[in-house]
Structures are given as structure tokens and as C-alpha cells.
Length: 465
Image (tube, rainbow, N blue to C red; front, side, top):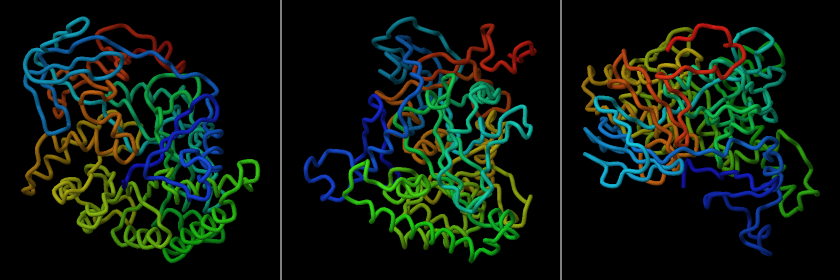
């Protein structure tokens, strides 16, 4: 199963769940074929909880009368959504045959899945944006695989609530792109907590941020390299080769016998599919060069990020089920961006690829719906035959796939988490506003009610409703 990584679930301090696509050698499991390997046990310890996450789930309640956009291809106008114990219990057209809890009349409004940003730096490039709150790049060496965005994430970042007010319920927080290998990213579920670990999306695999192109050469060209694209690829290959050797040296060992190396543990997780590889890459030739190196070492790429030239190799990316996380129309602020076109998202989607609208911005994350609408309009103007549901998938289920959580969120389907948004009008309107936003059926944003801000930095400020 491509694009599905081992999911780390924290049972107490050390228990671990993993998906069928990530299996260890038989020699390591012959005593108990279902037992976690030593490396999986060490990963579980590294993810052990410190603060218990908020256990509350919402419901029962029924949303009735809205246009329900499910991101599955089905659209119900009017329709209903029934939520029980934080999950979608029923969704369909007309009137709910068996409503649960209070029936909330949302006639004339729109309901969508919660939006998902596959590329954010909120919490690590926090507001107020000063040197003291900049945790995004550990720019000390080309390979800093051992760092985790989670360890620099600040839950008091006011940008998190602003993202939620734009309909975002989940975001992948990544290290920056100064390094060839920048470290681990963390998938955040927007339920406020005191620490980052309690805000992790339950069971979501880590991401591993990598980069190609101009950034690593610019940062390290005068610091011992890499200073060319050749050096970039050599650096990735050397890192993968070292991780393979480290894995081989530690096969079959007990956890206490493993030679701990936090850089190698991250790279091993990427090689074994327990962490998802997310690659900052703009040019088509850079993407192909990275894929050649990845193929050499059996590394699977979950998504290319920014990817302004993805349209040039959209057939290859679609065939490999590699996500394309990009903007609607940012381009030209450095040389490798000059071939960006506003039809990129649409052309990738038409080819059968997983087009994704990301933000890479504390401002842009507040209007992912409008960015998707721009990409849709550009595609239609170029003749692409795309529906509103196609564009909705760019900000819901497609990013969920790239994050390894599409079995939990991204569409309005029975059994999935009740992460959803009630919009006051068509979400692709420039005037649309998220009225209510739910995570696990808990209403985290309510524009109809007075509120206490999530962050102390917003106290005493006038808040727009």
C-alpha cells in the first residue's frame, strides 16, 4: 500500500500499532510475528505521552438542510450529517431518517470536511514573528534528520486559532527547507493543549522533511557544501546509504542493544515506510533526480511540496501516487519558480494525480478554500473538466492521503472523525466564512458566540467575528 505509513499509536508509554505495509524481517519477528521490532519499540518510547490529550468527543447532533459536500463525489442539496461520539454516523440527502441529539437547522449553508494543510510552519515560525519565536530551520548542517518540529512547536501561536477560523482542522507542521534533510514533521489536530505532543493527530505517522534545488545550495554553498545540484543528490544518496548500513547493523537486536543515533532512526523510519517523506522541490528535473535516488534505496515519496513544475511530469507523479502540494498562483520569487503556471493544480488533477493546495504561510492557511477556488477557475479557463468536488479534494482528502490519515479524515463518510465545517455560503466564494468548525464533533470555532482566545497573546485584542 503506497502512501500509507506505519501509524504510531501510544498505548501507555510504549505500545505501538503499525500498518500492514511496514513489516520487519522474519528473523526479528519469528518468536511473535505480530510483535514490534526493536526500532518500532524505540519509536514508541520516543512518542510516549507527557500530557494526556483532550479526550472529549462531540455529539450527538444532526446538521440538517445544508448543501453537504462530501469530497467523495457525492453532493447532497439539501442534505444532513449525523454525528455521534465524535464520528460521522450518517450522511445523505434530504431529511435525516434517524436524527440524533439536537437538530441544527443549517439551511442555505454548506457543510464540508475540515480542511487540511499539508505544509505549514505554524508553531515553529510563530507569531509574533521575531527571532525568539523562529524555530523553523536548524541550519547548522545539511543533514539534521534528528530534529523534530514537535520539539520546537509553540501551542500558544495565535496563528493556530486563525487557521481554525478559516476552516482548518488538521495541519502538517514541518521544519524549513534550508537543509537537504531538515528533520521530522508533526501532524497537528487543532484541539488546544499545553504541549505539542497532546496536539498530535492520533496515530498519524511522522513526516520527514527533505529539500532539493536552490535552498540547500544557497545556505551551505559557502559552508562546505552542497553548492550544486549534483551535491544535493550526492548528499541524499549518502544519507540513505548510511541509514541502510545502520539498519543492517541493528537488525535482530533488542532495544537496549541498538546503537542509538537519532539521525539514523529518522532516516530508518523513512526507509522502512514508518515515516512519510515530504520533499521541498520546485523543478521537474529536480523531482526526477530525487526520485532516481529514492528508487535506488527503496524510499517512497509521499508528496513533493511547492512543485511548481509538477505539470511537466504529471503522468509520472500520478502513476506513482505522489501528492503534489502547491499554491494556486505563487511564482517567480526565485529562479526555480519561473516556470510556475496557475493551471498546475488542475493539470495534475486531470492526469489523475493527487493535487493539494497548501499554504506554507500563516496568512494563506486562513483561506485555503479561496486558494482552491482560484486553482479551479484557472483550470476551467484552460479547458480542464473539473467539478467543485475535485477542488474540494485538494484541501481535504488529498492532503489527508499525503499525511497518511485518509482512513480517518478528509471526507464526510460514515465512521470517519467528525472534523467538519459549516460555511455561511458556498465555500468557494470569496465572501465565504466558516461559521462553525468541529474537530471530533467538538465545536472549536463558533462565530455566533463570544469567545476566549486560545492564545494569551490575543487577550485584550479586539477580535473580528
